Image (tube, rainbow, N blue to C red; front, side, top):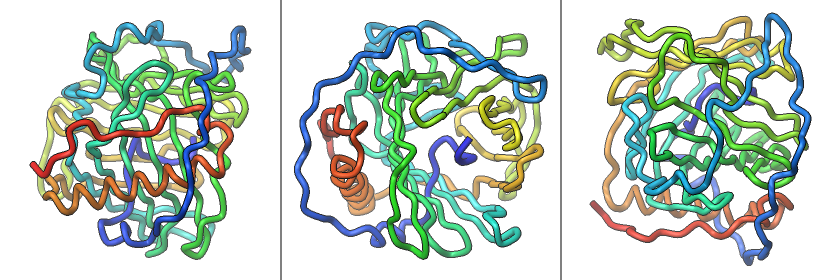
Length: 308
């Protein structure tokens, strides 16, 4: 597992860290999912997982409208998380924010919502990412791909871990079930064999209570997540509050010991929404230049950009 949160990034101030650059979309046709991809087996500490339900692009009628009660993603919403993590220099302050943009992008035949995030570690940009999420007609929220950029001393150094569902054998997975309940089988959250990416999840609790930023939540759903290809990375537990989404991330035997708590959720104004959109499109420009996988996608678009 590469990072703790489903979609979180630095601060609005960090929008200015990335500047635009000249590039053109490299057109490419959507590649079909590679058949008969071998799914690795797991271990007792890091078990394997399978699809929660069969992926079918025809089951996504209004896919960019994501209103799952445990992971609502309304365009123009900013989620700010604060915590700490050990990225090699001991436990240091860690901040992650997520903006749900007004952009959409078709991935593997499904129109996804584009999320943009930045990860700030000890005051420096460590990662910027685009994430592509959709909801099926039954209410399951799916991960259909990620474009994560890596930074060192605030400078872009590469994007080696890109995956897009339907390209190079990568497979979509469920981020949050429509009806999370105890007894559901372990489920795949995403799989990309070319980069050895494999995230699994299971419903650990549906009645937890947790308090963050002076507010307490009951009936919290806790999802336990792990990577069966990397058992030494431990597990991460995400606490999902009704009507809010992720409010806490806690490590279990994770060497990075990353902890995060939700410190703020707010609606962005027109200028900030435009700024988030600009950042997302800047990342996409670079993605077409540096990633062969990303070149198989159609450009993100804004069908209903507004200031509301």
